[in-house]
Image (cartoon, rainbow, N blue to C red; front, side, top):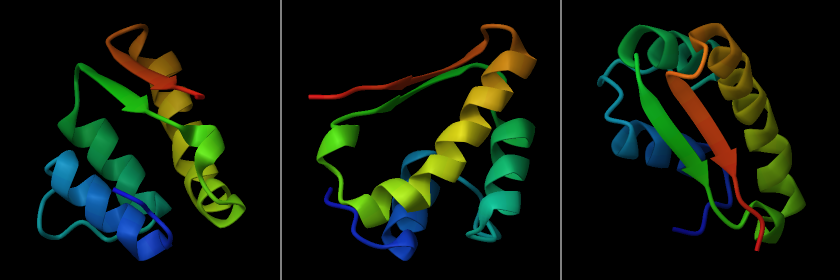
Length: 84
Protein backbone atom coordinates (compact mmCIF):
# COMPACT_ATOMS: atom_id res chain seq x y z
CA UNK A 1 0.00 0.00 0.00
CA UNK A 2 1.30 3.42 -0.91
CA UNK A 3 0.58 5.70 2.03
CA UNK A 4 0.54 9.37 1.12
CA UNK A 5 -1.56 10.98 3.85
CA UNK A 6 -1.97 10.69 7.59
CA UNK A 7 -5.53 9.44 7.07
CA UNK A 8 -4.23 6.62 4.87
CA UNK A 9 -1.67 5.78 7.55
CA UNK A 10 -4.38 5.54 10.20
CA UNK A 11 -6.62 3.48 7.89
CA UNK A 12 -3.74 1.08 7.32
CA UNK A 13 -2.74 0.85 10.98
CA UNK A 14 -6.31 0.39 12.19
CA UNK A 15 -6.94 -2.36 9.67
CA UNK A 16 -3.63 -4.25 9.87
CA UNK A 17 -3.25 -4.04 13.65
CA UNK A 18 -6.95 -4.64 14.22
CA UNK A 19 -7.41 -1.56 16.36
CA UNK A 20 -10.95 -1.17 17.74
CA UNK A 21 -13.61 0.79 15.86
CA UNK A 22 -13.26 3.65 18.34
CA UNK A 23 -9.57 4.20 17.51
CA UNK A 24 -9.13 7.99 17.63
CA UNK A 25 -6.73 8.26 14.67
CA UNK A 26 -4.13 10.38 16.46
CA UNK A 27 -0.91 9.88 18.42
CA UNK A 28 -2.61 9.55 21.81
CA UNK A 29 -5.05 6.95 20.51
CA UNK A 30 -2.21 5.06 18.82
CA UNK A 31 -0.28 4.91 22.11
CA UNK A 32 -3.37 3.74 23.98
CA UNK A 33 -3.98 0.97 21.46
CA UNK A 34 -0.43 -0.39 21.30
CA UNK A 35 -0.04 -0.32 25.08
CA UNK A 36 -3.50 -1.73 25.85
CA UNK A 37 -3.86 -4.29 23.08
CA UNK A 38 -0.41 -5.68 22.42
CA UNK A 39 1.59 -7.68 24.87
CA UNK A 40 3.83 -9.35 22.32
CA UNK A 41 4.17 -8.29 18.70
CA UNK A 42 6.79 -7.68 16.07
CA UNK A 43 6.15 -4.63 13.93
CA UNK A 44 7.97 -4.17 10.60
CA UNK A 45 8.14 -1.03 8.49
CA UNK A 46 9.48 -1.80 5.03
CA UNK A 47 11.04 0.58 2.50
CA UNK A 48 11.02 3.48 4.92
CA UNK A 49 13.58 5.34 2.84
CA UNK A 50 11.31 5.18 -0.21
CA UNK A 51 8.46 7.00 1.47
CA UNK A 52 7.83 10.64 0.71
CA UNK A 53 9.16 13.22 3.14
CA UNK A 54 5.55 14.01 4.06
CA UNK A 55 4.88 10.41 5.05
CA UNK A 56 8.14 10.16 6.97
CA UNK A 57 7.30 13.26 9.00
CA UNK A 58 3.87 11.85 9.76
CA UNK A 59 4.96 8.37 10.80
CA UNK A 60 8.18 9.29 12.60
CA UNK A 61 6.17 10.17 15.70
CA UNK A 62 4.53 6.76 15.68
CA UNK A 63 7.82 4.97 15.07
CA UNK A 64 9.33 6.81 18.04
CA UNK A 65 6.37 5.81 20.20
CA UNK A 66 6.83 2.17 19.22
CA UNK A 67 10.51 2.32 20.15
CA UNK A 68 9.52 3.75 23.54
CA UNK A 69 7.07 0.92 24.04
CA UNK A 70 9.72 -1.58 22.98
CA UNK A 71 11.94 -0.31 25.80
CA UNK A 72 9.06 -0.55 28.26
CA UNK A 73 8.19 -4.13 27.25
CA UNK A 74 11.77 -5.40 27.52
CA UNK A 75 11.83 -7.40 24.31
CA UNK A 76 8.24 -8.63 24.14
CA UNK A 77 7.39 -5.89 21.68
CA UNK A 78 9.73 -5.23 18.79
CA UNK A 79 9.84 -2.78 15.94
CA UNK A 80 12.04 -3.07 12.89
CA UNK A 81 12.41 -0.33 10.31
CA UNK A 82 13.80 -1.58 7.01
CA UNK A 83 15.50 0.42 4.31
CA UNK A 84 15.76 -0.80 0.76
